[in-house]
Amino acid sequence: MKTDELVYKEHIVPYSREELINKLNVALRDKRFHHVLRVEQTAVDIAEENGVDIEKASIAGLVHDYAKQRPAEDFIQAIKDYNLDKELLDYGNAVWHGFVGWIFVKKELGINDIEILNAVKYHTVGYQYMTKLEQIVYMADYIEPARDFEGVDEARRLTHTDLTKAVAFQTKRTLDYLVKNNKSVFPQTILTYNSWVPGSGLE
Amino acid sequence: MARTFSSVKVLPQVKRVNTKKRRKVGILGGTFNPIHNGHLIIAEQVLDRLGLDEVRFMPDANPPHVDRKFAIDARHRVTMIAGSIRDNPHFFIEMEEIIRGGISYTVDTMEKLTKQHPENDYYFIIGGDMVAYLPKWHDIDKLINLVHFVGVRRTGFPQTSNYPIIWVDVPYIQISSSNIRQRIHQRHAIKYLVPDFVEKYIKENHLYEN
Image (cartoon, rainbow over all chains, first blue to last red; front, side, top):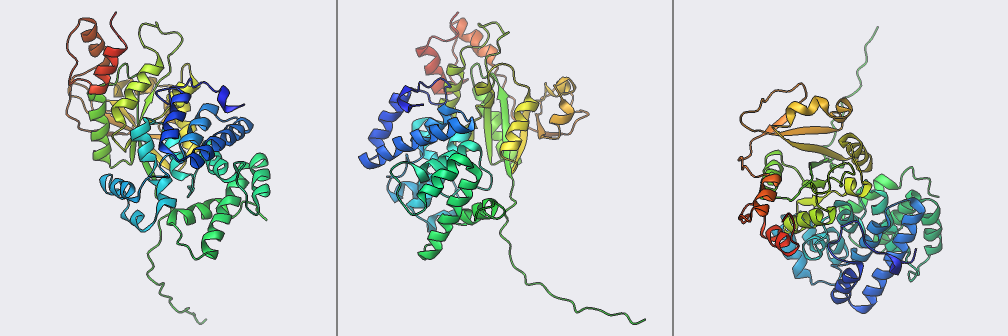
């Protein structure tokens, strides 16, 4: 289904899809805004293949990067205000924009649905247990049409044939990338790895 | 016969990363027609007393058999919840029953949520006046294995049950949704009984006026 044919009916967002898109257009720079639209379409496609609620996939795809372009001070303030784990202060935007960013989605966009907020929270670092929707957003962000990296074709093939294995694939690649480039690994990433990769049947 | 002892190995005292930490999730189900400060007080107090990670407000769908006058459109009920909890990072909406539509048995809902996130422990919050009806709940013997029941203590109602109940004391504020609707109908004040957002929303959308 083409996303521009979608009409929200489930009351998850207290306004229309058009209004949500306008808000994102304001919050995000052009390049990021178009990424978000592509993730939405990709998430809707995967949702259709997996019998998952399309409206939720659309919303989660649209809002997943809502906080991506906020200044570090906003996140630091939120970590303090909401008594989040102080360990988070040792990381940066790559971890914060999802793991903390869901708070801004809730507060500013008025979206309170637990599954969508979890999909935002886990879209970069994953989680031990992810619902289909949470897995879909995790994968849609990774394989949206403009993504171009070695292995993206395999990631796309897996996503459309075996979503669980695709999650394992991305999780493994992410950890691999962090280690190879001497980047710090957020502990949740390791928990995600341990839950999804061993026994996944990945080659 | 000689007995052999293997040497005793002392394991290093390593602090393990606890990967088995379970999330404690409160569920407050209802029609929320409309949500009022009594709901919010209960949710926050139970969250605090039991050290929950989050509380989810779980509105029910519009049951087809119920008089349409009874529960207004889910859109309004959900919007009023959303407007009331957006500043609280521990409060969420669980849309499972609305999205499924029709009548949902709690046991089916909780079974689905447990399957989706087996790492969660669910605390299902009910009023002390409801505890006596638990034996009549659909498939209660299965449900009792899926959730911990939290009873909000209410004077005048028995605090005994054949089912395990975690009792919590919450300041008893005698506000009910039906009472709110009645006040609106009679043009009486609801300020301070509901969040400002709800008061304004009801007025703007002319809800419950007749």
